[in-house]
Image 1 (spheres, one colour):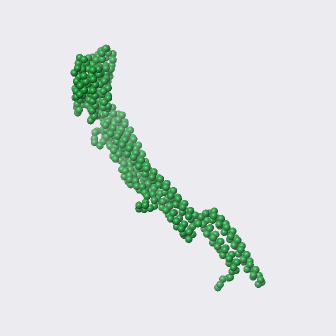
Image 2 (cartoon, helix red, strand yellow):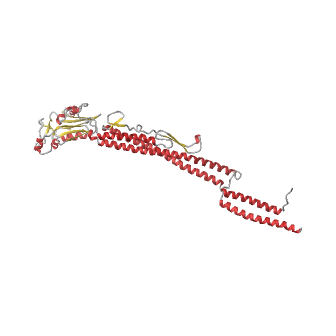
Length: 442
């Protein structure tokens, strides 16, 4: 059955009212969702572009967790290096304590007295001062005692032996020096020995000449006299003049020297050995504990931090190859009380010097590794900040393409509401016109 026939005025006003209502629905939906493009129908280009941008932003946000884990892994390794550095510094302190106790193991030789109580009574000077002031040579080739007016001498024959020489050998290092006998004194001899850097000489309160090594190695010391410098040095090498200064000729002979370490094991150094080895063990244990989420860059593990959502050659990432950090790899040997290959003998000064050099080298290696990790950490943190900002840019760009302007949409809705009211009024007027025709038939 056909529907009622509407007048042209009613139909036009009704159509306008329907269009206004439809437009109101669209704007109300935009205000409700905050989007002006809610489907591909609204704007296919903007809709799919926004979808792609949001998808990439979501992928980048997903990578942030991996980047954050990578940063924490690097920081864990960096903290481990910082702590290991402190342990190495403690090891240095331990070695310094052992070196401070070195005097007990210095090889020392004291000769026979060069001054007597009788001389002290005559000169009113100490035995030490008498010995220091005595001349080495004598015009009559006979040892003369000190008197109130003369310093005395050791009796060397200046006519046959105008030259003196000393020879000091420690390990593979030898020091030789010559000086004239004419006016030379025991004090001059002491000064020449002290110039060597290998040994220290002094006259003690008994008037004895003492020669002490500067390290714990055996000291071969010889004094000799001769017609010229060469002859004096040859004599010094065999110690043929040693007896004149209160020493034995054998003191100058390599391998049979009596100027050797006392071989006393220092209790202080022995106690420091355990302390050193305990600290050394902690280096290995600490390195093993410097892991994060199963990855330890101080145990040779590899870390890969991915920075973008792409694959293959287009993927950007940071690969960090860890290092196996241990006391052995740092060149820090175990400490011991005896001379063994591959160990630091705490009773030996040269080994302590070697330990000091090894620890200094270890600190250099740790600084280098720390610098590398610091650089990688800076890269990862920079990329983390960039990824956050880029994801935000993508999201903002996507929203801009589909977001509704609430102010504009609100104004449009207000205008449509006004138009709706006007359309309803117009429709009412059109209906009134039709009713006027009806009244003609009444």
